[in-house]
Image (tube, rainbow, N blue to C red; front, side, top):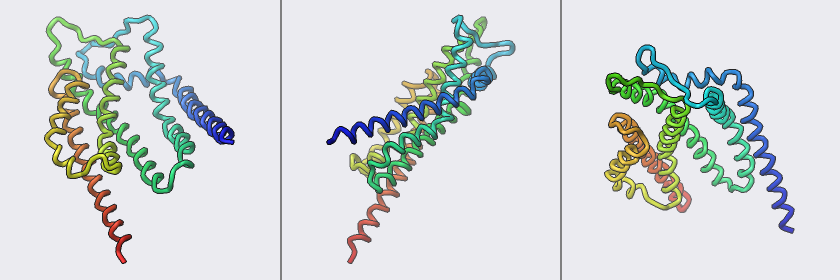
Length: 247
């Protein structure tokens, strides 16, 4: 008797996955023609920082084809992300209570927006500073020529690092809403958080003080923003409880 609902859920899950993958595939096919331009746009922060006449190189025979394809696939995934999130939401939402929907949907949208903001912060602010710094400290007689595949790996790592660290406000709100920690405890832990932000930045960024600071400071500020939002939600919840308990 329980097999039919389970089978129905599995069929719906397969349908949602197929629709999500189809959205990515269609976006990729639409962007395929401009794959070289897309990679050039991704590489622009480094190309602008290279000395006069400098260029990037490809050390593998197939890199000139597959690296732009990888970048295009990443962009296609980002472009089709609204469809993917909708498919996930359409599958999960029927099993949630109304109060859970009110909490989950804003958190998902905030997580997406913050992750994209972290990527944009890395691309527009961090990359130009870091690459110009690396170009400026290049020893005499050394040509700064980066392999396109290694550059892609570096960029993806930085995108992941900054996108993930920009999720701090969501994590803080979730921890307080779940009762794992209170706003007061988070405020008491502020000095440790600041130190931890610089430790995390030292681990995930290149070994220069400038890029580490450009990650650590936003990480700390995002923590403060999360504490502020959590405090506001806590105050609203307390006021609602008092209103409900009042005669």
